[in-house]
Length: 150
Length: 154
Image (cartoon, rainbow over all chains, first blue to last red; front, side):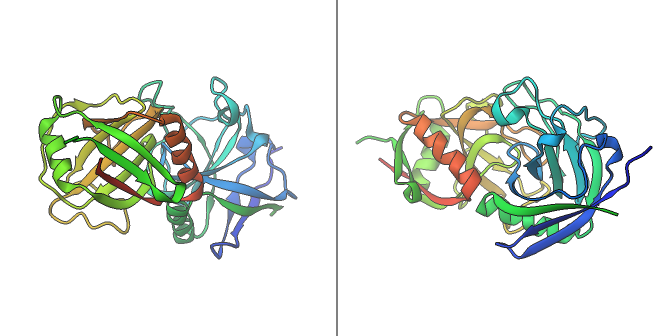
């Protein structure tokens, strides 16, 4: 049976930004479950362009494929890099906030694209862009992430 | 008179020496030297990996010289971003002269990237001291936000 989509909300009180969207849980094999509500750290990508991400340990090890770039507002899953070290091995939930993005392997391996799985979208693309641009200048942010059943 | 440079990050109380590569990149060193001091906010790269960069006011463009696509920790490079490139910086005006990008590479996971492809930069300097401490500051700026830096004559 396919898992039901989830509603996702992301609230950053420090910046006064609240976003919501939909997560399609099916491709994730029910790894993300409704009821989760917790503060997470949202980080800006160093290599992928106009992208921010949060570590999601439920996603560690999940196989992802399909897309090496995204449209603004799209959410992707990445299962982590088993050949990396430390946090690089952890799963990630990835938010594309602008058009200038390309998902790439660490550059010490050369210049190679890598693929993530599209798992959802944020409704307010402009709000997400505002959050991403602010994060690029002002650094990581603590946000409240909540998943609810639809 | 010494013709070396110093990179300062006042918010972190840091100052490191930068050896200018006058023999390998004389035009670029001369252009940068004439533009010093440069005081600008430094941004952590969002598509170039372990790189910190600042956008200087336009100076005499030295053109391609001692160019590198592969970069190493401690390299300091100049890259001119032409105005024809798609602009994904909301609050920068490229104008007719483009962007004058000075990049500091602080780790092995780095490749200078423009909006669409990797970019060769003019290698004109190298950090000659305290690179691990500077790399730690660059990581903190990724986590905590950009800060002003000063590139000045030693």
